[in-house]
Amino acid sequence: MKPATRHALVTGAASGIGCAVARLLAEQGWTVGMVDLDEGAVGRLASQLGSNTMPLAADVTDPVSVANAFARFGQYVDGNLDLLVNCAGLLYTGHFEEQPASQIARLLAVNNLGLAHCCQSALPLLKSSAALGRQPAVVNLSSAASIIGIPSMATYSASKFWVRGFTEALASEWARYGVAVRDVLPPFVNTPMLETSRENLFVKRLGVNLSPQDVAQHVLAASASGPLHHAVSWRFKLLLALVRVVPPALVRAALAWVGGYRPRPGKL
Image 1 (cartoon, rainbow, N blue to C red):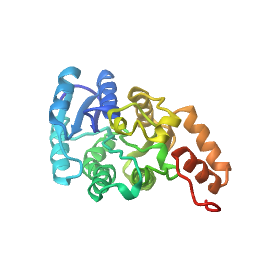
Image 2: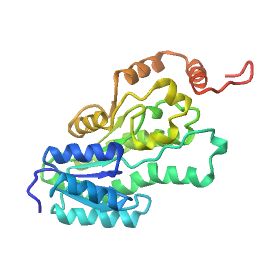
Image 3: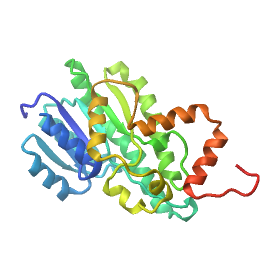
Image 4: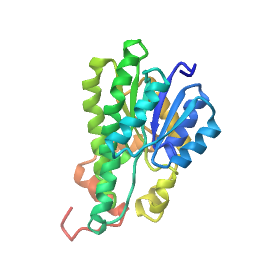
């Protein structure tokens, strides 16, 4: 077993937020298992970050692949896991009716089924850590799009509603094991996943004001304590406050305008 006192598994670690989280944890002395479908990328990242990191090639949509990767890491850290960070995710934008069925299925498989597979495989390791009094946690990457449905991001937005609801339910269920479950809700983040959506009107009009490193700091804070839902950035917190007081029909109309959607006259 490596001598670091805390152990973490980070999915989607090859790039973006997952990479930033893995890097931050490694710099702070954690033993980090870095899970990604891109075996070469996580291998190169492990070479950069040092001997307290472990690259783990796995497809989060395949429960057997996830179970095997998590079992390998469990052996490496003597069966104890202090933190699972579910960063693996996909984003596709555009009119819903134009999106291929295969694309919709892949997004839901990664964003939802993948997260569920990882939580199930991690639980024995998290429970072992809790039994030692180590206060383990799960941090799920949700999104600002989990608060209200975003036109042009219908499937992605729905998948993040699922993450938020799943987090709430699991937080209640796993409290009996001494495992905390929280999520982090950032708006647009400057990651490779966003590159194909730069021309989306929401992205262009609202802007991209966060880096992966910004979000990683919030993930680290959420791993230790805090509210069930960690909203990232003052802009998003202001939006949350407005959504609570503005009539829903007006909120939807505003979102439609931002996204470039025009309802028929007299319709909201």
